[in-house]
Image (cartoon, rainbow, N blue to C red; front, top):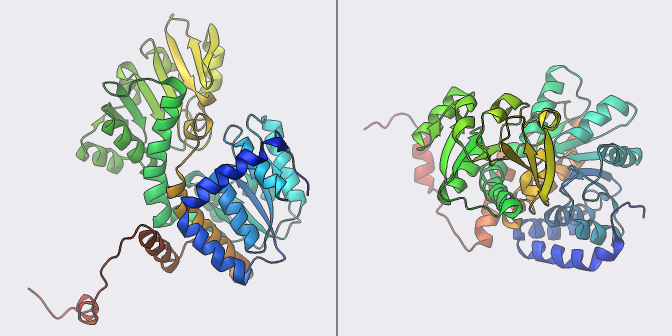
Amino acid sequence: MDYKIKDIKLAEQGERQLEWAEAHMPVLMAIRKELSASRPLKGLKVAMLLHVTKETGVLARTVAAAGGEVFLGGSNPLSTQDDVAAALANSGMCVYAWKGQSDSDYERNMRVILDARPDVVMDDGADLHAMVHKEYGKLRIIGGTEETTTGITRLKSMEEEKVLRYPVIAVNNAYTKYLFDNRYGTGQSGVDGVIRATNIMISGKVAAVAGYGWVGRGVAMRLHGLGARVIVTEVNPFRALEAVMDGYEVRKMSEAAKNADLFITATGDKNVITPEHMLSMKDGAIMANVGHFDVEIDVRELAKRAKKTRLIREHLREYTLQNGRRIYLLAEGRLVNLGAAEGHPSEVMDLSFANQALAAVHIAKDGRGLDNKVYEVSRETDERIARLKLGSMGIGIDALTAEQKEYMKQWRYGT
């Protein structure tokens, strides 16, 4: 099989990584066992543009066990774990990913994946979906899945403009994805990335979190738990009010910029931290991003305006501004949890990738009969994954009695 990775000799270490992840992803492994018997993806090519981590490796092998022929690329230049990519390639999978690939490499790898003429597209950020629509008009895709909030926003826009050419399941919108992956996964892994890149003490720092969606909530919660004094910036009045009620200080970014020691962006939008904000920051301020793309911090303008820059340590770059102050950027403004750390823990990706696997199967079975729209994960599938996870943790829950079910349906009984 064809592949392009950093070093196939890393395969043995990658296998150990995959074994460790499999031991901590019981839901996906149970689904793999089921799909291995029925092989619902047999004869189908599956294009996957995801962060090539050990957890993604477990998903890719699950898709392969279900009968799919996998073509895997990395969805971020810094997030690929090269040993995992080697292990997957060594086992016969088509893998095109390595840590540190350039933008041109990234686009070339996407084209290689699409040149294989896939039937199903599994994406993280909708770049692969977008390339299909821009450059591969003759491809006949059955349907796809999307992992992220950012990607779903893009796909919804395509749907509204009536240009979406196939159905896509919004995996991110499943309760068992965003309530856990976005909040607990990014909360832990984002702070982990900051600590690995800097080894700073979080306790006592003033930390500004831009955005109070599920990702921002998780980051703020973990920073607070480590002793930081947390400021939240928002544009949404409901989320700002929620942050206040959760006990955080809410300020405009122009105000937070003057006070915070650490900035973490989590909005999915561009230019959240501008050069003007940077010029008012303290000497020694640190900036990181956990939003999907490297546009939340205006890195390009920062590079233009700095009078000097140097790499202090891996993933930690110092910029000396014209006013003499030094500010620090982590992981080039890309996802700090994947660039400077290992991404989410296996236990939480177990939920997310269980959704991905079942969504791909649903598309393969029923996609040809669906309209070209963005669909939610079914409540039945979502609940099944939650119950499987609880069961793997040895936790049982109560069930409604027939009498209780009937009571919840009626309107006649009052106080």
